[in-house]
Amino acid sequence: MREFEYVRAGEVGQAVAMVTADPETSYLAGGTTQLDLMKDGVLAPDRLVDITRLPLGGVTRDGDVLRVGALASMEELAADPTVAERLPFLREALLMGASPQLRNMATIGGNLLQRTRCRYFRDPAVSACNKRRRGTGCAAVQEVARMHAILGASEHCIALHPSDMAVALVALDAVVHLLGAGGSRSVPIREFYLLPGDTPDVENVLRHGELITAVEVPLLPPGARSTYLKVRDRASYEFALTSAAVALRIDGGVIGEARVAMGGVGTVPWRATTTEQMLEGSPPSPEVFAAAAELAITDPYVVPGTAFKVELAKRTVARALRTAATQGGPR
Amino acid sequence: MRVTVTVNGEERIADDVWEGESLLYVLRERLGLPGAKNACEQGECGSCTVYLDGVPVCACLVAAGQAESRTVVTVEGLASDEGLHPVQQAFVECGAVQCGFCTPGLIVQTHALLAASEGVPSDLEIREALAGNLCRCTGYEKILDAVRQAAGRADG
Image (tube, rainbow over all chains, first blue to last red; front, side, top):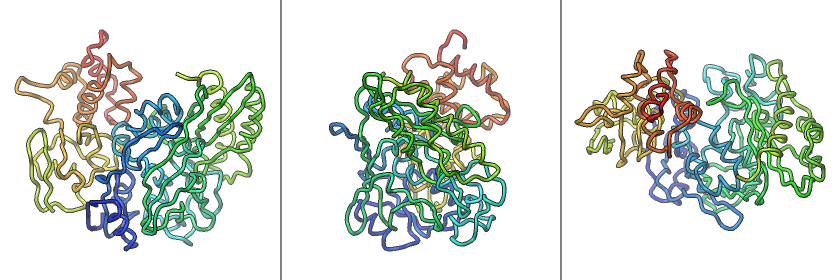
């Protein structure tokens, strides 16, 4: 790890000012990605501003919206009674997302910003990585790939967004609150993440120094059925090959509202909008679920190692829909 | 920099700490507490598990400065003058220790699991709670036996 300066922020405005003023200064929160990548030499900031003691934690409910402080831990959010009651698939995504120790450390803001697990991105000895250095190429496209993206991907980058939590938040249309030197703004989570295009090093709309302060999560309607299905190489403690976050409101034998998002397939957490459109107004039958799941993957960019994900992702969505409709009811 | 931490109930001071040191390094190399182990250094193996302000964390991914003025309990802090903690005793009695490198992390994480459990944890709950603690001797069966015994299960 390269030498760096460590500063503990005393208040929020001071932290934002310090990071904004210097392109080589970064925030430090839970550290589970930041310190890991610094040890590997992927990140090498001159200075870290530790924000963990700032008053940006807590989970509070205001009517049908949950306000989650950026510094709330994954475990804290998973343990929240409103999440268990009204956002059960978010709770499942959080609990499947990391070990208990990491859930105690990792923050919600940091989870949204966690970096890809692409082995070529995480190995500075590999020179071809457009995400680390724009214009150098993509080793993953040329060499062995498996835990990589098939949607939003191109020859420039197939790095996967690894978060489980963000998949559920994308399905829920969460809103990300940001604070910058020029003031605050709110961004719908689907606009927060940027497709890599030919600038894979730019992953989201955050300007340098802008800080995530909170995430607002609309609650599912009472009686909604939801589930998070994560398919992986082993039963626990592994990143997703494919995953699906599904929430259904079924009224009188017809799907009134469908929310479907996928993980393990996209360069960003992926909302399956055409699948949702087909589901809404249809009866919740296995045949409808299978047909709607077929629409979940369009125009995939595959390399030999990732071709299996096309079929696996569709089946993951179909099974998640069946599970939500039959077992994902209010608990 | 200087880091002041309450460790196992005692205020401890470490001087000349480099910013890039982890809490794990401070505990092991500066405060003479080698119980927590240094293995993957990536938060994946759980060998370095300690309590930080009452919750288990991977000390390898806590920057030293982040621990300032906070409270740490390591595996060394679990036993009392009367002897080993029941979790430790169960690991001894069940033969749940092979090379021993993962054991301190497993002891702390099991301690946390049993402290938080209302009632007796199921095998699935135990497995999920210990998912982030890797045993490369693959001695998981005896480890599960030890946790069941410590939990007071009839099959323990």
